[in-house]
Image 1 (cartoon, rainbow over the protein chains, first blue to last red):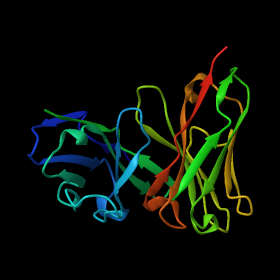
Image 2: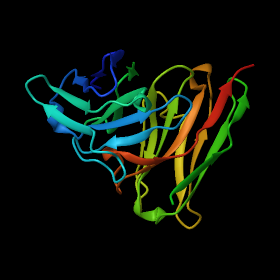
Image 3: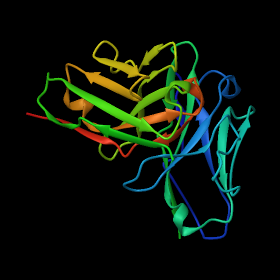
Image 4: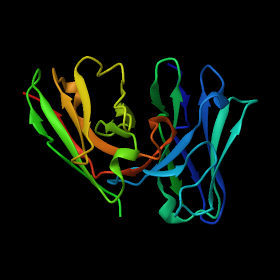
Length: 112
Length: 121
């Protein structure tokens, strides 16, 4: 299986923009779709982005996803940060050969 | 409104078995793949298993293959996870999740509240 590596933590001020990266260890990031989830403390995960850059209905357009083949990574960008965005964020993708879902280790976002 | 309600969690001794169930409502259950994802205390999300919509194809993480069995009953809108030969490493909150399509690899857009499984003597 490949690994999805995320920074352990990031922090930024309210109103600013933050980007969380998710780097695939081997294989091509564009080979399979990447999803992003938000998990607030004590709560179930929420799907923010699917198929690399699509937002489910109800997810604010402050959240956006992208793929960068040059760095073999995906990114979640959150603009206009709010204190309520303080959460753990996980990327996820699929490995075709093993038919496994792979989660990144998660990134803790602090908004202060 | 989509609702997923897990049941069956609890305390079990090492080597024991437990069966989790997830009751689904608010959507056409048979259309969507369903997944189980777990989270050990203080740790990240870990995919456990998935089952396709109508053909019932099943998929397992290496850590649980041969010990866990996922199944679904489209007539009762339920998905289950039979867990055997449990070890301390299986202690986690287990989430039932509805996938966004009939294929499980493109995201889960609804999650249950989770069922806590504790494996301890």
